[in-house]
Image 1: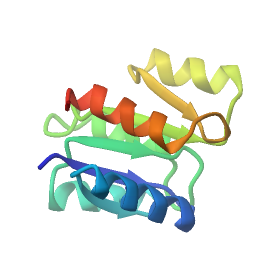
Image 2 (image 1 turned 30 degrees about the horizontal axis):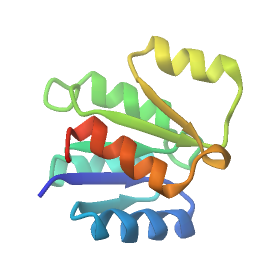
Image 3 (image 1 turned 180 degrees about the vertical axis):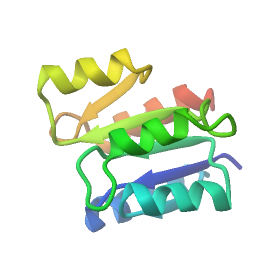
Image 4 (image 1 turned 135 degrees about the horizontal axis):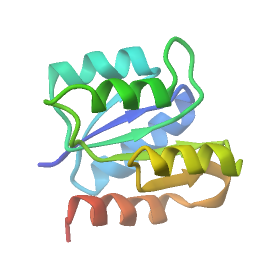
Length: 123
């Protein structure tokens, strides 16, 4: 079973994503900030990370850098989920190697599931 780590400080969104992804036969772990997310990655390396950008304690960009600096985690795919929609942030994320960036108000959960499956090549 493929494992997804969802890192977001929005409890309602975490619960919705966890429920939906489990229904799609994924193993799901959640964290409420980047610091907790890094700890969860060390505990059980996920196949993909859904990552918010603006969070307390450690933001998503910092967490991404820490993952990319570690040979054991640098190849874990990341899909950013955020309320930020400014072009500068999107450009920075794309330049730094992240290929998926979804603005929370512009997608529905089924679109996200499709993107996760595509990223993990799950049929």
